[in-house]
Length: 474
Image: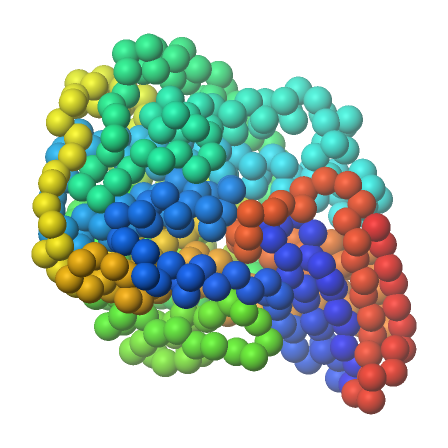
């Protein structure tokens, strides 16, 4: 008789989800599904609003990555106005996005994921969290908090607030960087570089003891997608889209993000509120692709800054062609933190950041506009259709977590096949499966389950609904 294991909720991710693991008659895993159980309807209730309000509305989608929605929304407004924003505005938006990458990746690495691979899978669940990490290594935990704080300070210095800054607007930004803000950022940089080096050293030691995790935590062929500059350099807020396959070969390049619908389709499954985008030429589900740090480092040829370029070279040697292990998302995040710090340091010497020429003015010149930017978790699309008065008639948001949906399902199934056998439900097995999802750092809503005794109910269920086994925690 087949059985079903349900993990509900999944903890230490941003949002609410559950995992179902299906067993065959022999007690082996036959399939696994990652369910997103929240419905928010953001796209629908934005209809009827002026497009100019969207940069103020859409950051409320998430308290962890509001800057990502702010910038993608502003870019969609740029497209509706059909303007090229002033160079100073583009550089300032980029600076804020770099701060967002630093703060979000620091949260993911130090607070959400490090308790697993630094403290051990068998550590009691009550201790395997950020507070447990503080107790075990207070200096490391403090450094991680400070690194995240730096990214948030960059956002606040530019936008006036750490969360939901009303700063980027269609046509540009509201205010420049001040000299005092520039000096504050510059003074903090040496500490951030030192913390990032500590994190690199720590994770590289972890890799020597976690080769099994590298092999089975989401290690499979797939496509990868991300923005790149015309010469293949890493991009985070411009450029065009590139797809590569698991051999590292480029299968599509310099694709116009404004026409994403010509090469990205969206599938809907009844098991989740999360849509599953796929590469249209290969169809569903063969067109599965991954986005985010792992994908961005796979599709780019260089980071464009020296320290991160040296790490990228080491990273690319970890795969035969592309780097396909999702466990190495953690390594990719550290490389992107380093690259972001190097770019921030470079930008601080640019006089344009203090310029007052920050906005382009225009009316409604296009009835549809698409804004694309690289959020920390992956490529983010904001697609707005408006009427002649600029009122929204249709909104489509394609978020990074949705684009990783098919890969997350495959990751859960791959890990479960190695650790789930029979009716036993050991705690370390549950945490390994959950960590497969944490590799992608999914962002499902504004809430973050990062600490404490989170409730978790796991059941083995027969087809007739009989509970064969049950375990609860939290």
